[in-house]
Image (cartoon, rainbow, N blue to C red; front, side):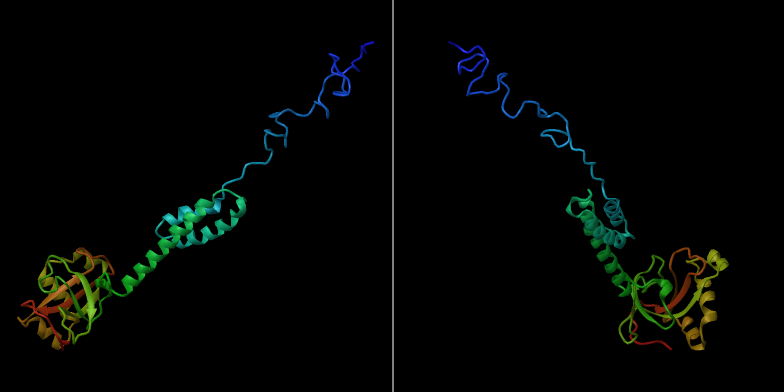
Length: 241
């Protein structure tokens, strides 16, 4: 006699030893969250963890390293940013690394410029010249109407183009009235600053006086520097009286 409740393995209700659940549901239940249900922690669901923020220190490191005067600050902030983004704590690690690299380049360039200026690689500024110094430079063998560049202070027993015989800081009114091309005015500026020996050199046709300023049109506080050169464009090889 057949079993109407599905004890027969061939029962259409899926009962019997092959499937003890008379309703055909899989063992273990069939009511778990489906894939992609959106429950936290479920396979394919959303992650409730808040998104990581970009580290502001790392971004600041990158920006400051791009600027000419803040490379050192950018370099320091880059190392701080590297620590703050370690292990994925925050985003922006690439900004920190770029900040370190650019900051290091900026610092090296800055140090190089300081060394170049201090060693006179780019020439000595006219405002830094002092009385009695012997100098070489482009344009010192003539009237300097075309400008003087590449000034370098040398020993007076070496060949040089000129010797500084007087310097004076210009007042505001003197700077406004100064005419770079007026030779008479040059003599007027230089003569009062010279001793008797130096003054005699000015009127000696063997020598030529050049007045130098930092710019063609000087400002208040700029120096007028009087230098003496040989009129024939030759080289001096000793210090003048």
